[in-house]
Length: 302
Image (cartoon, rainbow, N blue to C red; front, side, top):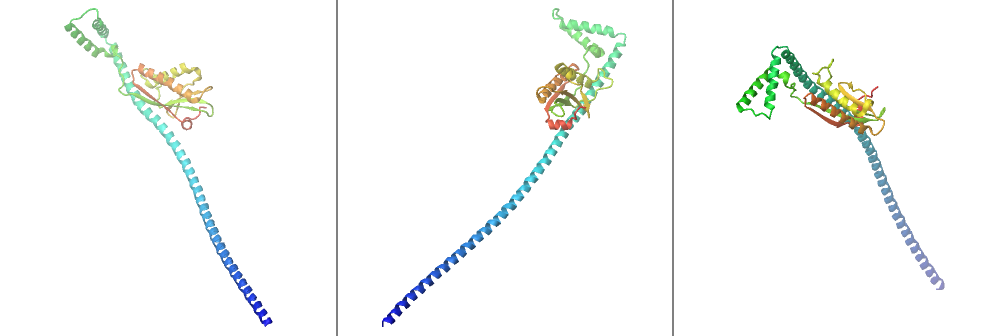
């Protein structure tokens, strides 16, 4: 009985140990399965992250390409914009030149016809007598100290009108064209190859030789004389460049843009005075042109 009891005790202990080992093995197997599942989830997450990184890399490459394309388009647009601005400036000069040529042609025709009529009248024998009568009537009509009866004033006014119709070119101012001399004066300051100020406009060519009926020559001389009076001999004579009249002056002190504005104002004042002296209406518009556009429009003076 003692051995059987010991055997049963030992067998019960063995069974308990086996059950414990079996339970531990199951726990370890479950843990292994759990770790395997977690590892698979980690691998899936890593795969998803790798795919996301690949997508981001592709997006980055595509974005960089788009940036390069935008930069290229911007450069093309800037080049095209500069070309359009240069063409616009030249077109304004060309249009002003044509319009000014029409006004100058009308001015020359009117002044030439006026001078021919004047010479014809001066060649007549009774012209001096009619001029004397005209000025005497003018004196009577303008004399406020001696009252003139209405009937006499009407008669004198009629005789004055008749004389004016006959000898108008000798006693009346020369005729003026109906058109207005309009021009856009572009001014700018350049740094290369040396600091200089520029003012330019589309003005018709002056005649060769110049005469009293040459409106472009008169306006040009007025603008140049006014600029020389302001800046002295540092200002070179204006030059023609592809039909455009260019005033150019080196700048030793100050900003070229400021000197260019002063140059424009001096030229504008002189040209308007000259046009007014010729009884021609003149409208000048100043426009600042960007230096890079001005450099493309006006070549450096050699």
